[in-house]
Length: 429
Image (tube, rainbow, N blue to C red; front, top):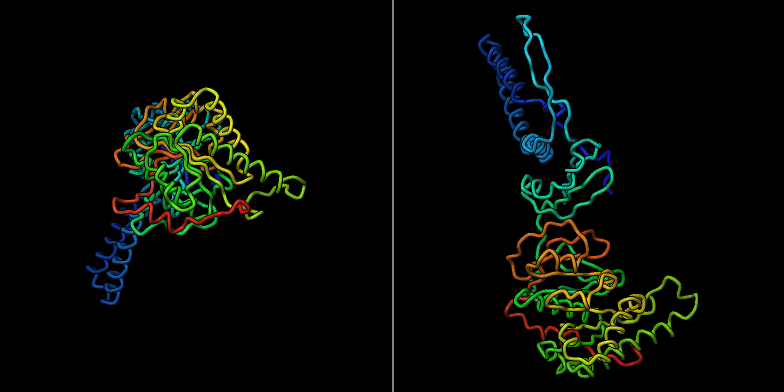
């Protein structure tokens, strides 16, 4: 929580910070006068030591981040004309009237620096600068030379939150890091708990790094002990998982196979509700309280299925997908949907908002981004890194730039998967 009392404010109505160099010059002058006056050598030695300490303190002060940010924000206000002036008449030393411009009004910005973040707060005062307070994204990023991590716009202010140090991508040359509980790490700073943030959507074209990302998530799920069902209408890489022990009966490519797998997953969800959530003793509990393994249905390229299936199967599959998305979290049954491009006929707003982790890899139009993330004022930057994109996780603010875990060319996904995969009996489900 960022309390208003924690912020230091900057305004052009404030007097400029004291110039310590001026006092340093006065001190040095006094020392020189003392030397000329032939004072004791001990005094000169102590004076020299004092000069050295003062100089070190001054240099450290100039590098202090609070001092620098305050200086930069004054420059920001001045260079963006976020102030008003008025002309006043004054008498000079010769008792003549002269006109002088003074600052009569100024926008006010605050700043708060922590070990991990710099927050710039643009205050809304109801003046002519109020409408501009939520449009400083690009300017402040350039000023601080940091990428904007989050923007929070309220009635009284707009906060711009910058990470002081760039988020680090997970490099998986040595395998997937140990998974703790039901938490999936995405980057060094981004993670989410599937028991609280349910279901996923990954969108990206060919070469975007989408396959690497979903493969990584599959490895995380399996390491949790999750049961995976795979639908791959294009008979691509994920369809090959049917040759792995434990996946034989849980991978489908034909429309009828996929519909059958979804029926099975949906029936397991309903059975869990009948068995574990049938009386008041289950109030507030989730699948974790009953030691039930997560069940994850990975649907690769749903749009391809919609093009090949007949109308009856389409209606059934979409109905079951929506049912799992709407009620699967408590029972531990989750959907991972993968699309090459957003499709309004599949991804309506009500269902989209139930997908707790949404990722858009590579570049996309603003319209496509809005279809995935909803209405947003985030300024999307050009994506140059494979696996780079934007991610939005429920409860973690607006979508932000991230780079999906990198598996590398020599990473053996199949062998890594076999390390964690195990047979699960019907009773365990």
